[in-house]
Image (spheres, one colour):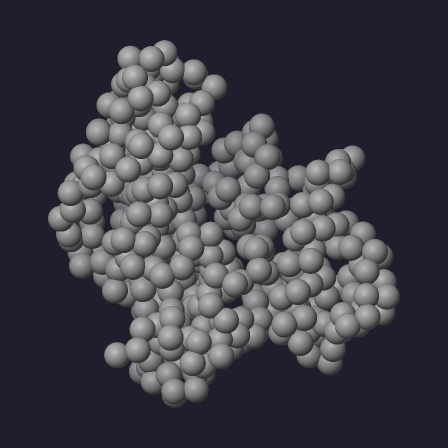
Length: 435
């Protein structure tokens, strides 16, 4: 049987890791919008940077918390220019842009139509249509969808990349004073990872030899000393813990889940898929310590459920369907039951009447296999029923400290918009309904 790499090449589809290096699909929109108003490379780039700031697009997979105009350094200009060229090159590959002459860059008819789609129907419709260009060229969403469904024996569809800091394993940062303390951390980590593999993934693995390789790499790069009693430089703490975390995530992805491409490409495709709704990816699920990814789509010849919508048809007759349930009596009942169950499960941990709405959202999205967009739509409809006394429960939403009230730079978890206001804590009284 032909392997997947050969299959992709035989169809003249570039390998998945050749995707350009940016996460936000908004970048393609702001590029098209900039080219609509300008034609010279330099002018388009200036507009691109201005819109990048306005839409709070960071260089990572997280948006910036504020859109404040700051003095841009030379280093930032170089990074922005790199991202700009990546977006321009990918958009050109989709025939959205004609940049054969850098003094007269133009939108193609396809690019103009896609820009109108965004302006008339919004980002989600834009992203779903953009998927057609991406999937035709790369086939990445189908490949990752297949990997997710084959990843796990105990939790079908779940891909789990665990991550544990020393503190989470009982070692405080102040107690790491020598290389031997870090070695102790890695041994505790191996025990935890082996346990996770057995309990969550359904396999047994001995990770000692892999851990030895990681330690050797840390020693060879001078981050740890081969003399384990040597005093540890605390300035290296963050670098070492990141190297260990990244090494194990790459091991899980490549050796356990048999993903054939780079970790960087996996991150790009999963966060693009999250924006479209083909899958959900999060590092903040309250019941998993690390990153989880699971599908919100299927690739089949046909589906019988009305909750799935066709988004892309492949040459072999298979179709990519997104799970986009409509608000119906059955889905309403399932959703309300899910939020009530998640709420009372979280109350055991929080020991408070109000619990974190973002954590509840993660649990409900996982149990119902819905996107954050669908969750927000359904929670607003549920709240409207609650206000009209049409639910057997009473729901209250409040605002704790919002992300912009912290010292954080990036918005790592989107708050939930309810009744046109951001909310992040919820309380449910299941003993009586109404107002």
